[in-house]
Length: 72
Image 1 (spheres, one colour):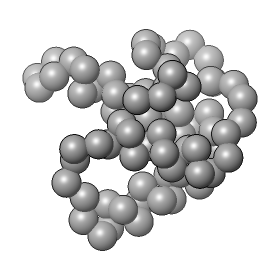
Image 2 (tube, rainbow, N blue to C red):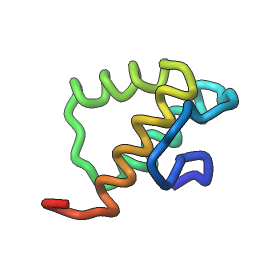
Image 3 (spheres, helix red, strand yellow):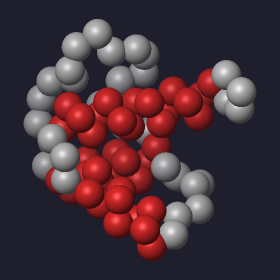
Image 4 (cartoon, rainbow, N blue to C red):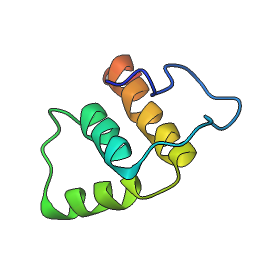
């Protein structure tokens, strides 16, 4: 997972700009190991096209949910 993904709860928007290729790579990293169908991939591509702050927030949710484990 990239160091750009916030590891804890966010109180404000993560700043900065990342090119779409980097946003795609970050999202792929947090989704590594998740079986993806064609619709999943289409939505992941759409998410990667969102602004950096929004995409990093979503990636942070995914990473923190995975780290917490099931039922947490």
